[in-house]
Length: 385
Ligand SMILES: *Cc1c(COP(=O)(O)O)cnc(C)c1O
Image (tube, rainbow, N blue to C red; front, side):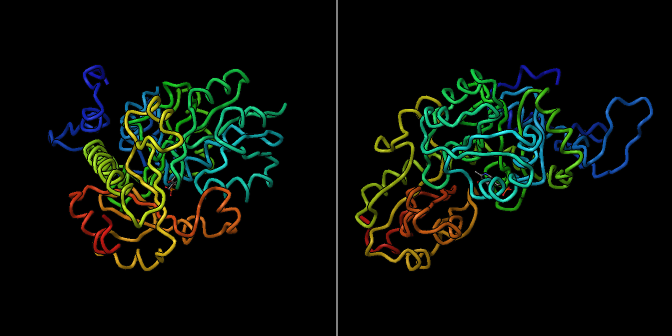
């Protein structure tokens, strides 16, 4: 884009970068190009949906690269398509990867269920410190994978330390940046190679899009792209168009959600029916200092532990506005019990080892007026104050 330098702030990038120009009618929004067949004579781009090179796919990637501050980006049909394709693009049979212990369940399942079949070795760390990653390095270690803040306890890993460790040992570093988004966390500037996003979450933001993205240097992007053409997890142009439209309001939505989350975390921390609260913005959170250093905010997800006297199922059912539902990051507030949903397949002991009790609730804060959300808590918990 010739006027790229004009687009610096994240709000401006969200609104303007990555727009497909409507040359024919001068419309203010991107046209949709759903074609699967494009002229090829004398063209230097081979445009095809599975190659992620149609106009809508290509331009949406520019918006994501601009937000993450990377040379390049690429979109996928889901967050897991982005994650699996990226990992398999760099890992060969005989290679070893080190992963943070508490990562997204789907990613953990991909590693545990599939990697043995490809002869890829893996280790999960014991904890969150850089030493916990370092102690797992072996001769055949090729990559390190982190997710910060993590799901559901919003644990924080020092990104720069892990990036430096990776560089010193010539490893490829990956981060799942879904919880923070590039609006408040730019891991590439801290030295991480491959940034992964489930665009199903904040990028889409309306609980109606399934998509994924990677951001990286052009060199790394090409390695991932080469495998993606074989695997075929591309995003349809209709959804690419809708995602680009949705991302115009990403910053407005996310910053409102985050502002509400700060207010609600402060309300919930004094609530008598709540025993423990996890929000990186609270000084009581173990990762608060690192989060303050490496993030420009603390995100919009809060987890909390209900008092043992309260039945979590009953609590979720008694909510009138907040929806007990899977997934997160939509404009509407939602809640779930990780023990009943995302971490159901783990044994209670494994759950407890990660700090996940039966009374833990993950709360994705929406854009509603905070007093209305508080009212819902008050009626469900019989006087939280
Ligand atoms: C949802 C999620 C994913 C997977 O994304 P899909 O779009 O569902 O495939 C990966 N990482 C994190 C942190 C997520 O929340």
